[in-house]
Length: 195
Image (cartoon, rainbow, N blue to C red):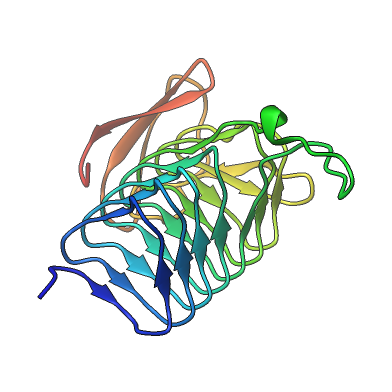
């Protein structure tokens, strides 16, 4: 008996590593040379790989495809039907596998339902990409990115609640969990609390 679960309707190719406690649901396909960490939840109709690394504790909702050159760190949430790309200028009749661009999603980040992450960008730690947003450039740690194209509209706490507005070098506190943050040179730093 394995220490992970794969529904009988799903396919797991050769040379795939699946961590303890991970659950892979209906009609999903994990392609060769992919590594999935412990305690992940892979929803229905998900495709991962080839050569993709998914960290521990990730939740990948229904209808998500994670292509080669995409990497998810630990505790990443991929909302239903969100999209990753790996080529900037695709054509059906031109092979561009040598042009795949690296996309990194850092620890604790969330990508909302139907969002699109254009390849070659980094989603920062505990950042939140709003539902339907189209990311065309890097998203900073703790940033809430919304719109088409996505831009930072607010800062969010690690607990995912929006932080109150505040000025550079000031300290702000999350009204939900009490965590404190400081903005310095346009970068948000966690000081104390739910860290």
